[in-house]
Amino acid sequence: MSITKKKRYAFVEFKFSVPAMGYTEDELKEHAVEQLLYDEYEIMKDLRRNPQYAEIVEEIDEAEISDYFWGEEE
Image (cartoon, rainbow, N blue to C red):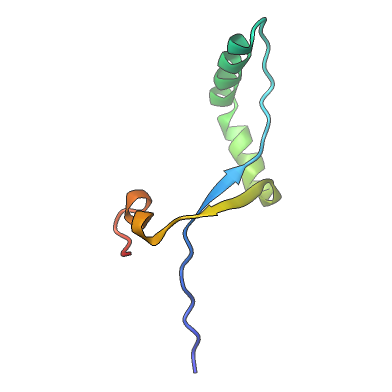
C-alpha cells in the first residue's frame, strides 16, 4: 500500500541583516536597500548555504494557492 504525500504550500521567512549607514532611519533603510541590491548574489548564496535561517511562518490556504503558484490546482 502506497502512502500519497500531500504537497504543502507555505510562506517562508528568511532572516538576514544588511549593513547600512545614514543619519536618519529613512537614510539607513534607503542605504540598506541599495546594499541589498549590490550584494544580492552574496546574500542569496549565504541563504542557500544556510537554510537554518529560513522559517516556515504560515501555511497558504488552498483557496489562495493559485494566487501564488500559477498552474497549480486547488
